[in-house]
Image (cartoon, rainbow, N blue to C red; front, side, top):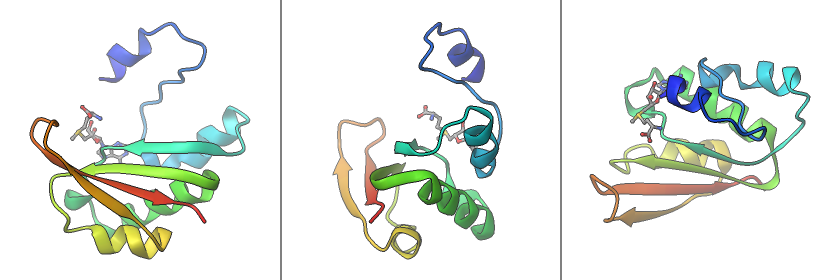
Length: 109
Ligand SMILES: C[S@@+](CC[C@H](N)C(=O)[O-])C[C@H]1O[C@@H](n2cnc3c(N)ncnc32)[C@H](O)[C@@H]1O
């Protein structure tokens, strides 16, 4: 997927092949202070809890106030984790995804 993304010639796209827990390194490198939104399909269900917390905390840290974190999962098993980090979430079940998935949306207050 990275190879395919890296071929897209668009100045707005910065393709990075690294773990999302290192987000801060690239925010600094690219001189970006805040993000409007984070869209993730990282499989938190199979990651160590500490790594998941680290990634979600970094995402929250760099989101602007009112910024949105969007995550898709195939179950609701991690809903409490999202609530712990963001103190809020909404979710919807999207049948049109293949396979159908839950979309979680958290807002940075
Ligand atoms: C279910 S796939 C989704 C792939 C793609 N985003 C899509 O929607 O087709 C999960 C992706 O999360 C990536 N991933 C797993 N752990 C990660 C981490 N710590 N940081 C960033 N990406 C990770 C995997 O490499 C894999 O590409």
